[in-house]
Image (cartoon, rainbow, N blue to C red):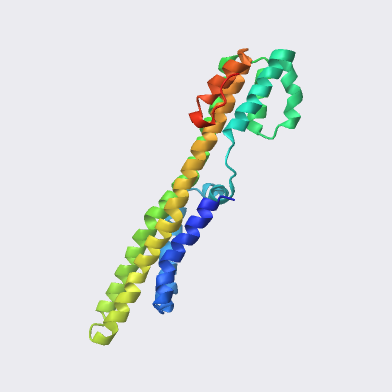
Length: 253
């Protein structure tokens, strides 16, 4: 579980609602018609913008914002260097025996392509397409939450306009103007709250998750290509560690 996402979400809502509760007027901020306009309207707009299968895939993307385990790049590089050392000692075909011990399907596919005797260009082409497809899938999830973050405030304004129109029709009773204005502004509050505490932060987190996963796949691809080319394990480590910050590098020994 990503504690940063959980803590940030809880903290954002706490900082918004604690002052409201302390003011003793929480019920004034609860209005179901405003919820229908903002949430229902935003979901309807996004439904018109994206195919249903992609929208369903957004739930999987949402899980990544909360439950993805960060990649240990140093450990990943160590594993690839171990594979490189094994290939140098026992030959490239020896890596096929390691496939059953691996969990990463991308790594397993890259190793299988190398073991099958494919040229470096073929491996790079096939796995490069895999990386592009990963980026496209991740971008779709991010785009959906970006869209929600964009239209939620807009529907908040629509709800405010609806409320103002209803309020102006009742100007003959000045005692209702204050209450009517408060209700009219609630939809703007809902739209801004949903966009800035949920949709936009999640879209940003998914973008970061995508960059990290693509970096992981590029490290794997570079490692397998280096092993396929017969690079010395020391050279392999130096090559792979260029992908990570210097403070995490072990260096060749």
